Length: 333
Picture 1 (cartoon, rainbow, N blue to C red):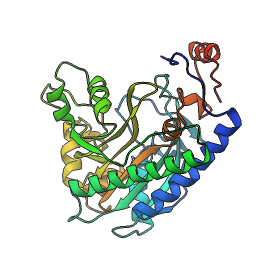
Picture 2 (cartoon, rainbow, N blue to C red; picture 1 turned 90 degrees about the horizontal axis):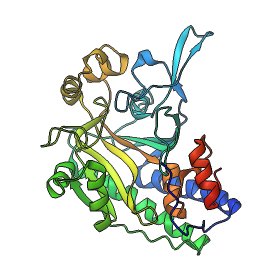
Picture 3 (cartoon, rainbow, N blue to C red; picture 1 turned 135 degrees about the horizontal axis):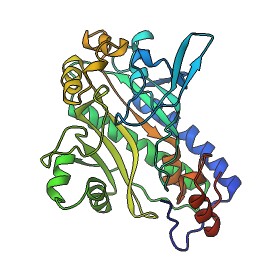
């Protein structure tokens, strides 16, 4: 459901917004590539489902599918490139300490529509090869700090170009586990726990997403075949305009053969084992990696002080959203 805060007015005009989006995307990806030692690569919009490369998200979202008569197969529009990137690092023969990033564009047809969610998803997907020795919590937290630093640097550049924005961010990150959030706010649902914590800690990394917590429920859904549920998490910012936790990135150290084997069984997804990606990973043929996705439209919303994601991306909206934004004087791209 769309909500436009009382008295909200965009700080930038329509054309200034478009120019600022371009500035953010150029600036941030250059900083990210340098900080994480990444090379840009091209990526697919769709994949063959028989490879097992599509992201199954929570396992209930329906991919957009279509037939490809010339190839004699069906194809699926990607939900994300979480698994494709790891296969690409294997195929391109990348070595520890080096990685890739790419522009990922996806369609999530079953997504709820509100201020933060659209059926169109655009993000920077990145992945880097690590060693067995660096497959640790410290490696994960260092990568989080690097990404937060890149966001902070981008905010300074954008504020310098558009002084009216006054976006106030910090480089400091608070690390907390999903179980610690539950222990601290036992009476609140997961998203409200995030909101309450992030109001006090404006940049937070919530760790350990996927396993069931002490209340018998996972903090949030995670597919079992890319993140290690013990070594993953979400980067959340406090959004003062919408007064909520604002997810910028989902990321983690990826499963090795042992954790994939365990998580497939826990999730009831053993039927995936014969797929090419899963078979290679279970056989130890794919490199150990860390990676994630960083929302492009989300980052633009945060740095430009926008109330609705439709102000920074072009998508399809329901009639109530269009009416609400029109009445508030908010232009949807």
